[in-house]
Image: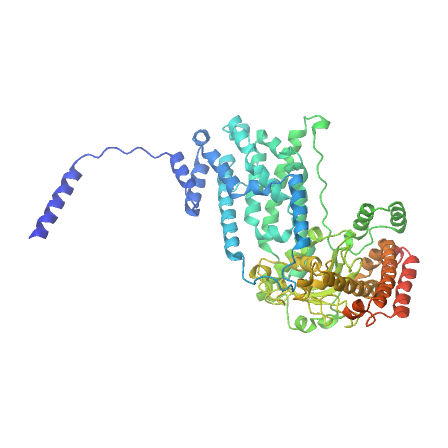
Length: 633
């Protein structure tokens, strides 16, 4: 009975309440709804799609109301936040300080992942979480750019017809100032400097949203100056200096690597087609804007960048090469000439596989090659990934007289690669050329590429504690050395990182301390003595095997690179060889005088004065009489 009475009273109360007339609720405006969606943390995709649709469906009379209610300002602020604009901006002085600090730290802190027995192998940061956070910010940025694009033009504009003045009459001077001075220009300048096809392909949606927004801005004459003029000292013009080179780099990918990919990369092709459309819209708007400007106020357009694609022709004749070399004596001048002479040879192709699929050159991983069909449907994504990485290398591999990396790819298969790395200056590997074999396994990119070291003097020399005379390379990123998780390979890594790691972490100034446990001798008299003697051994091996042998018997696929490299650096190598002979004589005399030093590390075990001095002297003679290589290659 009690329960029935309670239910009856509740029912009566509900009936009484429902009989009354409720007060009218305040109508929710479009601006309120959009503002509510933008205030969510984190942003939600479904609500951002609704917000973009609401903006897109707003009429020319309604869009000024959105601006007055702070919608555009909020979007621009969130773009700056999601794009991490302020962390990406560094002045020249700040950048120099950062690099100097890193160099100073490298001189006192041992390198990771190369064999130093130092510290813990536990991870100091969560890679997966970091990547997830970055992807989330990138996704938010794309949504926000699409919303801004809907305000400026519409969702996914095709730019088939030119807009009339009435179409953008709602974009007033305050709107122009808000958008033109927003983070959009900074983000465009930052991202369009990226010349890595692989990296761009991993973030295609972001690049498409950025360029689409830039094209929408270009459709509004009042916003075009922001695209033409650099936003700050030291910055580049979006329209005149960045979009055209970016487009050319992207277009080179499909034209250069189409034969090795087997099947077309339709997703990338569609992206490149859109990039071409957006670029033309931006360039046309810039031309119209500058048409009435005085010549002195115009910004010169960057020439279309021709990426250093695979070429086989010799780009310099003998006369210009010799005349330039004769006039240049300083290191900066040699670096300029070095790039001119070798730029077009940095990424080459060669026929590694002959008839019936048989290798016509020695290659470490020939069994893997026989067992892998790169054009198999199951390996299609692997092949596309490799092609994108290789397409990025002409613009990202180091190329200078101090240290360079060259690659040669098979004409028909992009998973078979030869690599040539020059030893950095101020190391016992200076001026030497070291060869590697690289093959991408079927599990790539989820497992690292297979790499083998070839410059071993027929297995007689171990150039580094991390480079074995049987060709094994000891490096965490290759999975051949224990290291922290962030030092090991993951699917976000690339061959480029492997090559840079080899050059920067193995070919170092004091390789003796790469041996596990030997780092405890760093900074001690004993350690410095051991390191000095070890360097003398390595420098002799470099002169003998990485210079003399390479010069006498260059592999056909790197012949042009080797001859030009040694001809341009012949004076430096001759001085290097003379210093080595003087130092070796001095060290032998000191060793003979000091019984303690003689016992600490016997030099006689590898030093044969007559034989070794004779071989080094022969190298000096060969370099002194070396003809200009353009006649030979």
